[in-house]
Amino acid sequence: MEIAEIEIKKITPSPFQPRETFDKEALEELAESINEFDLLNPILVRRTGEDSYQIIAGERRWRAAQFAGLKKISAIIKDIDEDRQKIESLIENVHRRDLLMIEKGRGVLEIFRAYGFHLSPKNLANLINSIERKKSKNIALIPTEEQIDNIIKKIHVKPNTIRLWLEAASVNPEIIEQELKKPDDERIPERILSRLSTIQDDELQKKAYTKIIDLNLNKDEASKFVSTIKKLPKEEQEAVLTKGVPVEIVGNKETGYSIEVPKEKIEEVKKTIEVKKSAEVLLSPIKEERQRHRKNVVAHQKLLELLDDLFCPFTGQKASTHLRWISDPKKTLEEALEQAKKNLEDAEKREKADPRFIEE
Image (tube, rainbow, N blue to C red; front, side, top):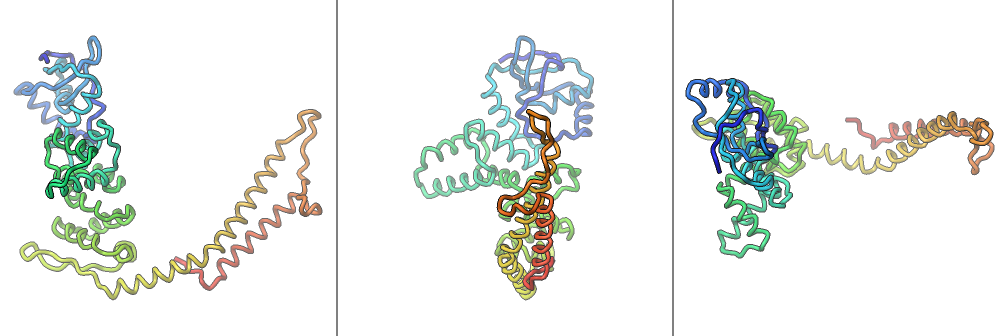
């Protein structure tokens, strides 16, 4: 390793940076500090060519140095290949305090992928939990589990903390994207966000997230709300999150919070849901018939459109649109289309007239 002053323009950022966004105001503050006190800690880079470098750690300092108007930056040059750089860069970055748990969770995922483990955040979190339980009971780990345990040791972070990061990263991506766009002071606390991952259904996760925002729940209330929701059966979760069953928050910060869900309301909604689901099962053949007729109409329309462009390559004669089905040679294709439309209309009428049909 060597320390050198390198031209900033010869350095490129790491493609393995887990950070989603860089706060411009924070970079400008760091730039002011660099102008006043100089850069206290060199960045870490690797050589990628005769006169080019890539950041392993210190991208934020590199960006701030550009804001400060520096032409060169102090850097430690480390001779490692890209695979090793990826792992070192990711491990270095997940230890940064300014990263969100979501970003650290994604960084951990990338570390494991670099070692050949392509798992979802939830599956990896569950596997780490299983390994820790085995170790606490002195049960021997299988080779794959030993590999995962060794990777955790290389990251130098407690398994429970890694699990928390992974839980945050396993929350519905739409929620994560929405949170990352918010200013820091408007975001839901990350520990609450990570608990949303305990609600198995992605759509219900989004509903719970929306409910927390709509009810303007504080940290303790939101925590209790998610804990209560995740313990409910899925039908009851749907009742509270999608059917408007009210929840009551009882208590205060001193005595503690509890969430009360009115069971009688849930039972009413569950009955409605069950009736609707039963009706949907019974209606399925009718809906399938309607869909079949709709496709038939579209197919006839497309066929007639194709015939407009069709001509004999030998004589140039245009194709006739007066084709007939062999099963009914008296009717032309145009007449068949009209009949297909009529069949579709009849199917739609039968569906709407069926007493089992339930409007939303």
